[in-house]
Length: 413
Image 1: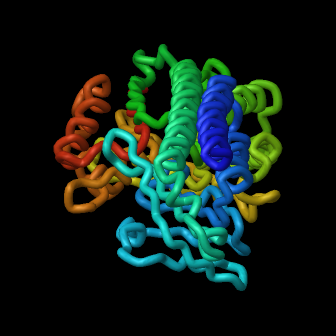
Image 2: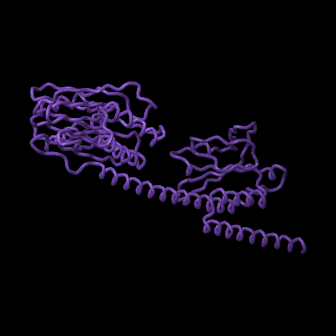
């Protein structure tokens, strides 16, 4: 009779323990404790109270793809390796997991954790107490272990999804801000008069980059125009380009000392702003309306194309390397040529010429040059869109790979 009463008390105590455990875990989840804290509580329940000797808990919720990573180890030495094949967990016999330490631990039971009928985790149990005799606690409390494991893993999964949602919202806000900044950098009013006709277009990619072009007057006879592309994407690229634009205008307006000196100053500025983490390809040209001379420097940018009325074309490649790559530019050369009137200058970012088609072929500068020679008499205001239309036909079903900035400038008088 006494033994029966004791057993009844033990059952009641165990039942109370299980209910209290579920309440404690639920409360911890509601309090939004970290995944690490939740796993510590979970481990103490299985090992400290139920007497489960060895545990490994695998999930693919913490990684991309179908790689299963171990997020909990108990009762073993070393770090469990990743598991690529899910079939590993479906072995008929006990499994052995390779560890980076000296121990290889044998596990007798694999418990799948399902959510919406799909496995989100696997619990491997090696029961030291069961090996010593008696009923294994893993077998005795199997249903409860499954319930607790499922509760914990679903909570961790939901935490992960919430973190991803918050991160995605942050990224979207950052990209929206970067897009606004980039639109502000693109000039709204370009010259269209008896001296020159300039028309540009900027076609953003879904990942905001650092493409930028600009046009401004230095004095009544000298005009400056440029195009640039920052390595990288997002808000940092947009901030760097915004800073670059402001500094460029200030140098030309207040400290003009020739193209070579300008790019040397800009190189120092980019290094200071980007800390060596980004660089800028850049093309800058100065047009003297009186003489028709065009002076330019190309800093690692895709060479603009100058098409003369006669049908002769030039690639404007004289210059140096990209800005921000080295503390000092190794050498700087500048180009000078006569911009015959009417001649056409087209400058662009790599989103145009590096765009691939369905056969993985790039649009390329040569194709663009041929297109411009065939269409050199097209009105300047129509030419940018006509180029983009040709690009769309070329790329077919291949999505756009990058931002595209494109400017067409015709020198008239």
